[in-house]
Amino acid sequence: MKKINTSMTLPNQNGFFGPYGGQFVPEKLQAALQEVVVAYEAAKHDPVFQREYHQLLADYVGRPSALFFAKNLSKKLGGAKIYLKREDLNHTGAHKINHTLGEALLAKRMGKKKLLAETGAGQHGVALATAAALVGLECEIHMGAIDVAKQYPNVLRMKLLGAQVVEVKSGGRCLKDAVDSAFATYMADFEHTFFAIGSVVGPHPYPMMVRDFQAVVGREAREQFLAKEQHLPDYLIACVGGGSNAMGLFHAFLDDEQVQMIGVEPAGKSFKPGEHAATLTLGKPGTLHGMFTYLLQDEVGAPAAVHSIASGLDYPGVGPQHAYFKDQGRVRYETVNDQEALAAFQLLSQVEGIIPALESAHALAYAIKFAPTISQDQSILINLSGRGDKDVEYVGKLLGIS
Image (cartoon, rainbow, N blue to C red):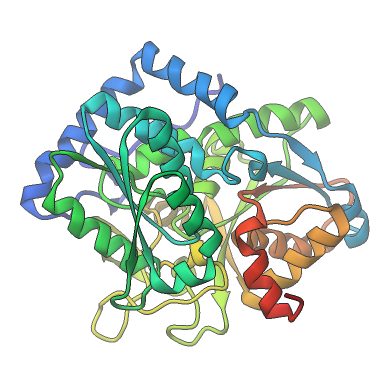
């Protein structure tokens, strides 16, 4: 296996990637988090745990996911060759199942009784409810009221899988508020509960742990691309909210200096406060949900209101390792607005017969703009992080076709 540059990937013993990360939590939660640190370090080096996890990835999730040459899209755009890493083909329809299975197995190993999480688009919630059913644990999912309305098919899926869905009606009623609500519940019962955070965010060890479980995406993609093209891709593109799908793809390519990486944030309706969630583009360092990272802040330094057409991207923070990559210049972060993402959603559906998640459509939208500007002998690998089943009703209403 290719050796990864640990100076860019391993946090220090306090969970910092450079200045970002850490454990900014109440004292009563520090012991609970340390329990997770110790348990994860043991599981990471336990061949029995790893064997069970990877067997489930193969037999339950359906890995490896396909690497697809989007021939029609590439021809239409007239520039670089575009490949899609088909995480949308996973069981439950997105990349989220990669880490929820790991978190569920770890919770079971620790003797916890319940899995607890937040969700925005609902894909993390569905994946966690699925994993909870598989391993025999209770499951409680907190979801903002706005997202409940936008992503109701996923709410039904979670309930069918046996999860309790808590609709959060406070604050902005979106992902940040769901995280706040889930954290409050965790503080009340951390002895019996495992907080299965849904991205590479939160206090240490979650940014590292979720990344490690998602790294299978990049390992597979690297091997698959080499087999097809006999060289590495020139560009990697993935959407960034919290940043788990992007980190999962980027991780295996960090030492390949010739491979350029682009994370795509939501520009929403505009760059006015409250109308976007472009954290790395317009934010500044601050503390949120137990971590020090880039953060969209209001005039008094509190987390700002955010918006994205994609519920999974409307978060005012970002994973601390992404913040570190921005400062180091290893990853370039760009933006795509709601209308560009909606157009990309339609284009891929009509040209390739693949309906993407609105989150993934942000990465596609940037590639649609970028591919024609580079030569046909260059290549772009996009992480198609999820499928659009959850979005079709909402998109239908926006387009007036429902």
